[in-house]
Length: 119
Image 1 (tube, rainbow, N blue to C red):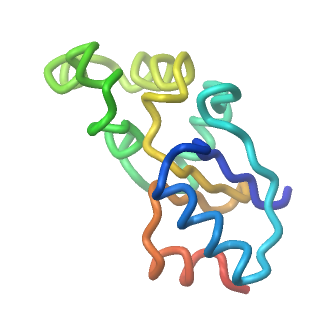
Image 2: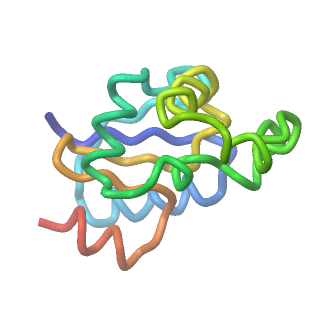
């Protein structure tokens, strides 16, 4: 599997991440996270390969997150329910989400990208 990039075209952080990947000649397949969010199985695999808790996959500054009052609800939800919720709406997922099946990064941090995606 090559690099798969889930981003949102209007997101400035996503634009920076895409630019970084292109400048570093790292080929990737892109998906609009709002239109084609990863499914539950893909999210479970990304969780494992990221080594992060499921909470880190939530876009906590997003409108949808606040509308649904998730700050208070997540603590009482099972991990499976949280994953189902993420898969149901790409706007709940922190972006960009980048994976190659072995590693996954959430959000954009140039140092993390350099460590993870530079061959």
